Length: 112
Image (cartoon, rainbow, N blue to C red; front, side, top):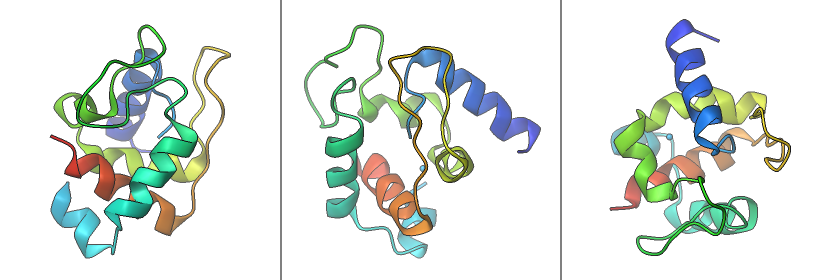
């Protein structure tokens, strides 16, 4: 993991997101926004707001729509592929396939 990606991962883990990419990169990789939303709903919605509105169910968990304001979304690809691990026990370990990563990143980038 590069130092830049490690820093983004550490910042992400500290934010409570732990689990889970720019539009051009996701589009070029063939990311499907609809499938990405489904992944977010299945894997992230227990703690994070996954849509364009609403609060996260878990205090301190940032809404997914805020991620691209905090991090270059593409920098999350490696962490999603390797498995995101955080310092708090509520965050499950996630590891996604290449296509799932593309889909999830496309969805994250589609949020306002």
